Amino acid sequence: MPRYSYKHRGRRYPSLDFVYLLHDQTLEDFGGTQGFKDQGQVESALAAPTRGIGGEDLYPTFFWKVAALGYLIANNHGFSDANKRTALLTMEITLQWNGEFPKWSQETKTLIMKLVGAGHLSHEGLRFALLAACGYDVDHYDDLRDV
View 1: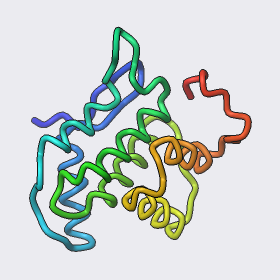
View 2 (view 1 turned 180 degrees about the vertical axis):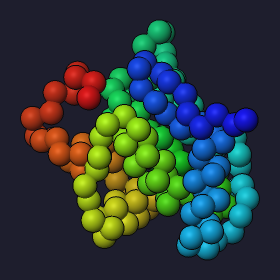
View 3 (view 1 turned 45 degrees about the vertical axis):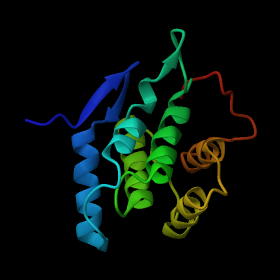
View 4 (view 1 turned 90 degrees about the vertical axis):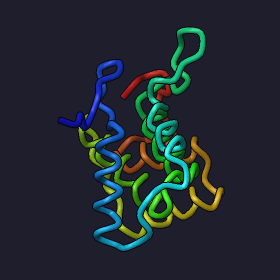
C-alpha cells in the first residue's frame, strides 16, 4: 500500500506516490502530456523539506519548506507537463494538512505560478506569497518562528 505522506519535525509532507497521484489527476482534469522528463528531479524536489547542512535544516521554517517544494517542482521540470499545476496543488495540500488554509483567487494562483515558472518570482518571493495567502502580515512576520 502506498504511503501518501511522511512526518518531518512535526509537520506532514507529501510522498512521491501522492504527488504522482496529484499529477495524474491534474492531467485528467486539464489535459497534457503524461510521463517524466526526469523523475530524479521530482524526487529531488520532494526531498527539499528534509535537506540539511551540518545538522541544520536547509529550509529553516515550515513556509520555507513548502515554498521549496513548490518552487522546485515547478522549475525542475521533472514531469513532461503540468509542473506548475502539480506544484501549486502540492503546496496547497501540504499547507492544509498542517492547518494552514491559503485564501487566494484562481487568478492570483495562476499569476504566482506563471511568475515562478518564468523565473520572475524567487523561492523567497513564493514563501512571502504563501504567508500572505495564509493571512500572515509579511511586513511583520518573525521568520524565526516556525508557523
